Length: 113
Length: 114
Image 1 (cartoon, chains in turn brown, blue):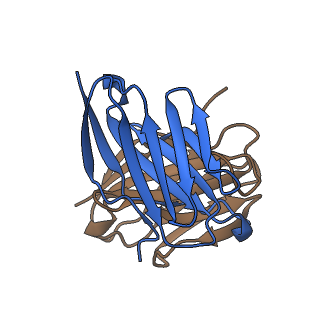
Image 2: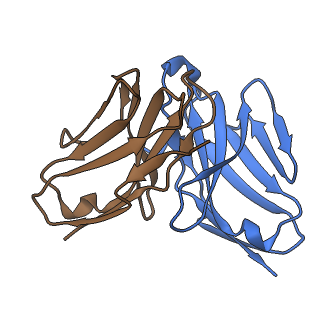
Image 3: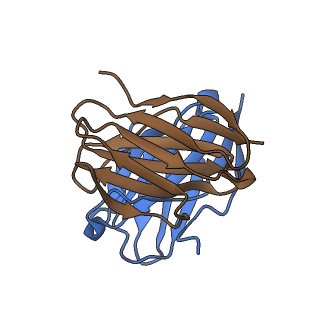
């Protein structure tokens, strides 16, 4: 079965711009989580959606937002980009209980110039 | 406040020997733990999990040990193979949170020498 698909894989933006990243979860998975990976910081939890509702949010500023659609696909948006937003953004899907394995996509590598 | 810590940024091990990767956590509410492996330019892939009702879980060459009193878990890889060279992340969550909020460590880069 198809894995988690993230688009775009790579993108370059300049400071002040905004960006939207997309994630298609594994078929049948209803939970989608987003993580930011930067060197030395590991994976930082951004937010998690389940059935179009945000269930939890990490400690990121309001410039980071997301949503989930009725088909479980999810998008995350970062507005007013800063240099420090350069990172690998990873999406993970899971079946829907609150424990268990996360299945990750390959990530979207964002570079902010 | 780093609730999940992997204090060794890197580890080198000879092929065929045991690799031991360590992880410490501070939140006593954590009761479910995962280990992931990550190659460059790929997303993390799941290795093994353990819940707090167990102190050991084994899957092939991979064994995870959990010491709840010490708030410590470790991943043992025996025997280590060159293909195991990757960054390993541990992650923890509290099932009472009702969500898939996993807190990840900063990772340990394992290099298995042929």
